[in-house]
Amino acid sequence: MPAPYPVGVRLLPNAVTVVALSAGLSSVYFALGGRFELAVLAVGVAALCDALDGRLARLLDASTRIGAELDSLADLVSFGVSPALVLYVWQVGLVDGGAGRFAWVVALVYAVCMALRLARFNTLLDAEDPYPFTKEFFVGVPAPAAALLAGIPLYLFLHFGAGWWSSAVVVALSMLLAAGLMVSRLPTLSFKTARVGPRFVAPLLVLVGLLAAVLVTVPYLTLAVVGVLYLAALPYTVYRYRWLSRHPEAWDVPMRERRAVARAARSARRLGLRPPLRRRVAGRASAVAGRARAVAGAVRRLGDDGPPPRRAPGPAPQPPRNRLRLGLRRRR
Image 1 (cartoon, helix red, strand yellow):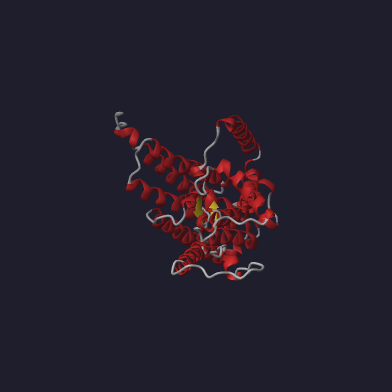
Image 2: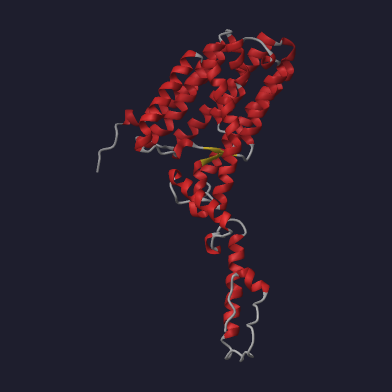
């Protein structure tokens, strides 16, 4: 049995979470001083730490209840309160000073929606998943992605300067959109269960290097483009969730092999074939399968009550249409 990690090493995930909390609060400090570039950088550092602390906890086998609660509180501050205050200070003090009350209401709505989203996330941790594939999705937009979407007008302002994207209406709509997506029931992709095959390690490293180079060269434009691409990917995520809910044969298949299942399903539809009812366990299909089995048992029992009647010579009678629909054969 391997020796446990030292106590100092096991405290590393919580230390990373505290760094994320400090970075989120520091963004407000930078915004009050008018240094919005550093405010955006501080929120980015908080997002990076948020992506690392959970993985470190699982790697070091140091997952604790206090660590989970601390992570939620840090997310509320770093991606809820801090972005709301940064955008409020930027909008009121630098762009449009007459929109103070309206901007403060929008900031409150955003922060409250972040708290509700994190509260629902914590309650879903102890709930049993209705489908085995739901661990690949979040319910609603996660906290770091919501902060990214809400800050798109600020990124464009830092790159292009003032414009229509920095008006009070556009900033308010951006924050309200992010707030609504957080508390929605839309399924969004979770990359925690993603696995990279050996063939894709080298291309992925090249892509990461390219993204890092672009981020260093044009950071604010890159953040805005990433936010827009994330929004554009939401319809595909919803489609993928619904497709998986209708195809239970793909639930236990690795993600990289689901394309073959999708191609087989499309081929079956073109040929007019339907999967067996016993494999349709999602939705109302299980109820249909149960009724079909009950009818088949009743027909079988009726057929065992006595010998089948003699059939007169001539063409064989056609079975009833309801039997054809259920796929049953008439006993001879």
